[in-house]
Structure formats: C-alpha cells, structure tokens
Image (cartoon, rainbow, N blue to C red; front, side, top):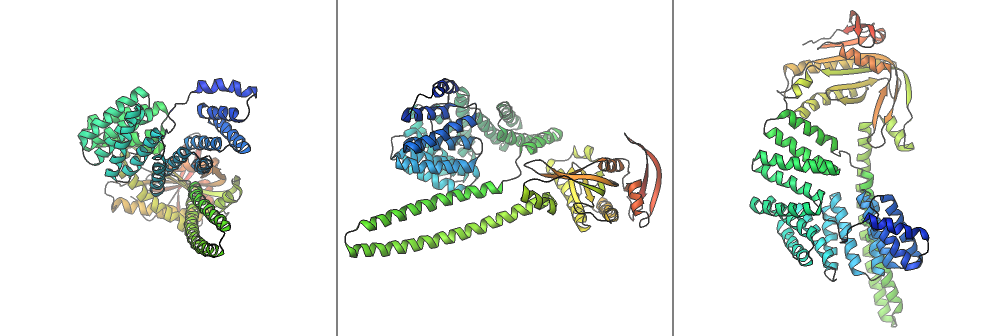
Length: 594
C-alpha cells in the first residue's frame, strides 16, 4: 500500500486565521514585506476555497518579483505548488516547485531548496515515476542534512523510505524510517511518529513478520485516531485487513476492511473507497458469498480510474527536462563568465577549450536525450490516437481533435441492432467476477470482429447487451443488408459456442432485434467520451430484441421492406409491444438454430 506523509509545514492550517486576516487584506494599508507576509499566511491558511488560496499565492509571486524579494518568491511558488498538488494539477505543481528552487537558491535559503526537492519527489512518487522520485528524495535529504530543519529532514526520510519500500528495497526503507522516527520522537511530533510506525509495519508485513507488522500498525492507528488523520487510518486499516487475509482469518480481515471503507466514504476519500471495495469483494468471494462479492466489485469498478491522461504525463516529463536543461545552461553561462575574468591569455585559452569541449558534449547528450524523448512522445501520441479511434468513429475522432467538440448529426436511414443473452442476470449472480468478465469478453470480442468485417459501427455495451448500427457515420444504401449478414454470423457463432464453448462455465442462447429508420448521432461527455445515437428508431430496435426469442433474428416492418427481396423471412403477424401497441414483426431464417 502506498502512503505519503507530505506535510513538511509543521504548523496546521487554520481557516479562522485566514478569515481574520482577510479584514486586514481588504484595508489595502500594508506594503512591501508586511503585505508579502500577509499574502503568505492567507494562501497557507485558506483551506475552504483553493481557488482563493491560489489567487493569494499568485499575488504574492507578482509582488515578490516586483520587490525582488526571493525569499517570499520561494514561498509564493511553494504555496502555488502545494495547492495544485492537492487538486491534482501535477504539471503546474511541478513547474511551481522547480521555480521555488531557483528562488530559494537566490535567497540563499538552503532549507527551502531541500523542501522543494522533497515536494517534487512526492509528486513523481504519486505519478509512479520511481526513478525520478528516488533521485529527488536523495537530493532533498542531502541538502536538508546541512540545515537545522530537523522536522523537514525527518519528513524527507519518511517519504523516501516509503518509496524504497514500494520498490522492494526493504532494508534501506527501514533505515530511513528508523532515522525519521528518532527525529520525530526528539521533536515530540506525534503525527510523524504515527506514520513512521505504520510504514515500518507495512515493511514488516511485506517481509512476512506479521507480529511486528500488527504491533507497529496498531500503534500508528491509535495515534492517528487522536490526531483525526482519516486518510492514514483508512490506509492502515486496509493493510491490517490484508495481513489477516493472507493468514486466512476472514472474519478479522472483513472487520478491518469494513472499517476502512466506512471511514473512506464518510471523508470522501475516493482512492481508499476503491481499494477497500476491492478488498471486500475478494474477501466475500473467499467466504463463498458471491452476491456480496459482486456488489463490492461493482463499487470498485465505479471508483476505478481506467483512463490515463497521456497529455498530462507528457507535460510532466517535459517539466523535468526543461528544468535540468535550464540548470545546465546556467552552469555554462557561469563558466563563460569566469573565463572572461581570467587575466592570463594562456589560461583563458585553456579554459575556453575546456568549455567548448564540455559544451559540445552537453549539447550532444542533450540532442540524444531530446531525440529519445521525442520518440517516446510520438509513440504515446500514436497510442492516444489509437485509444481515441477505439472509442469513436474515425470521422468523429478527427472532428473532436480539430475543434474540441462534436456537432450532433441527423441520419435519415440507419439500421440498429440489439442483442441480449437469455438468463444472463440469474446466471451471473453465481459466477465469480473475473469469470464473468472473461465470459463477456469471449462473446463481445467476436461480435466486434464481425461488426468490423461488415463495416458497421459498434455503439456501446451495457451488461450483456450489445448495440451496433449501420449507415453512419458515413451514409450508405446497403446498411440493412450488411446488418442482417452480421446478425446471422453472430447467431451462428453463439449457436456453435453453445455446443463447443472453450469456456465451459459460460453457455448462452441469444436474442437479436433489428430496426431501420432515422437517428441523431453525437458524442456525450467531456472527459470519458462516448459516441451514441438517439431516436425512436433506437427504441423500436430495442423492442424488437425484447420481443424476439432465443436463436432468432427479429426485425421490424421498416427493416423488412429493405431486405425482403434478398433474405427469406417468416411473418410473425402483429405483436403487442409495450408502450407501442401492435407492430408487425418478422423472423429472418438462419442456417443454425439452437
């Protein structure tokens, strides 16, 4: 389990302090350093309104630049980085922390440089970039050891230890935790002591020493309950559940997992809700309560973030590159300046040659790095385009990339198909979640291949229902014929699988319904895009599937008029349809029937 102790500012935020300081701020009587100190306190203590806190930080940055006060410039960028990290804007947070390092260096504030390096490491650790995280933790610790800021050093050691634990470097992690614990104990900082104990317990658990793991984590939870640190409590409770899970003590494991989920839900800790739900699903599966396991598995799926923002990752990677390149350029500039101050021509010539050599090597390395980075970025861009094309039709994806939105379009003639497995809901209640997903993937993967073969468009799936359409996003005249051919292949595949299914636990019969008519198509959502269609045509197609029978393709009068000269159909007569009244329906004859 990953847990970061990211509070390098020891004094707690206080909204009441911010509210009282606003009155002074509104008087506009303070200037220079007094106003900068006021803005720093306002930005730090404003906890109810993060946008307002960021506004104070930006104002502090602007005033510090104007006054050339680099200490407060460092503090402004630090506050900007902290707030953006809280709301998940990691690229802006990293950029702010890098700038805070430069400001701290100019202010000769060594402790500030160390704390900024630690914050950068925390962000990279959250992103899962372990090499960058370890690199910046080492920089932070080396710098902070030179200062008297013991609590910040202890925090850096604690966070670095957690990163090394995550990377399975257990002995190094324990060394860091022990050193951090001694500092926190000497400073009487209870929260730090709790996190040190808890993280040591997590390492002991990974090494198989359950006795020490339970002892340390229990002590950590006891301290954090008094501190009302709910994130830490929830995470450590979940780790206790995992320990008892491995020992097959299901009852105790369930109690800890439920306590973790209850705290996470009350405090709005989405990441913890996801982890606790998955643990409960696995526990209920182990005790044989499959329906309860399925309920928690669905909660886990709801909270799981399955899409990574490649653009944000690319920006974050570039931030580190730009920072290192700027540092290298600063070193080169310093060397050039030193060369100009040399009085002896011979020495100046030697220095010049050395500078040229190192500059050439640096530029060559920079060229190779940029080239390698561009290759990675291009690969990620292609991957992003491929993901988008898997979600949206090509024309729609292109429109979204070019204009940032998709205009809904009306199509006068489209054929819509719905499928549904007989008895799926009842069957799924007695099937493990992973087997259920494997079963659906087996059928729908083949459906996707058939739909692609006939140049049709998959719209969406919902549970065991599969929906596709023909005649969009490009209008065609033969969409109804292609849909009937595709439906027959789907039916043949399901029929064959019913007899000879490699997944012995999943054998279904299928109902298929088809209708033809006008629809409106477009993209819904602003983050997780979904291409969808609407209209009466879609509703009738769904009714065709509902009123079909297993092993049959049921079509409407509209579709029948399009395909009657090409396929043999059986008239069913008029069928009473819910909310529609009497409607003519036809079965399309097929080669195989279960």
